[in-house]
Length: 160
Image (cartoon, rainbow, N blue to C red; front, side, top):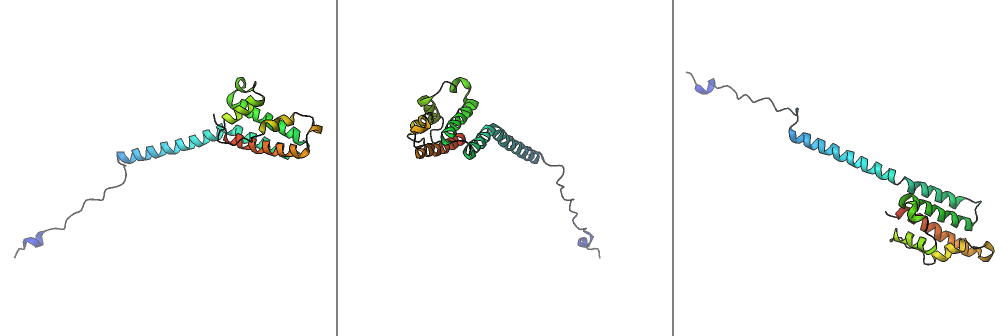
């Protein structure tokens, strides 16, 4: 007897779908990822390049601090000159060159408001221009430490 069920053949499944070629949405995801990675790399390289003057100034500040041939008064003057050099690099000679005494300290304060400026910074800077026989060595050391700390913070944290 001819059984109709015995005449049926097994179901033929189609071949599985391959992953290649990729669907359009995958190309969009890959392109977006590549663009984001390139932007992040560009951003950090640009930031590193723009902050090169800060790294150079920090290196010069450390060399001033470690220079044993300089007395504290000369170190204060060189740190002040380094701060002016950094400011000229960033803000331009026309803005910075004419600043001195209180105007210079006000400029430093304005461009790094979140950095605590020592209250007697003007006095400490003025002492650096006095003859050394009028100033106690302890006062010069205190002034040097204040200027070193403030200069290091200002170089790291000033903003445009």
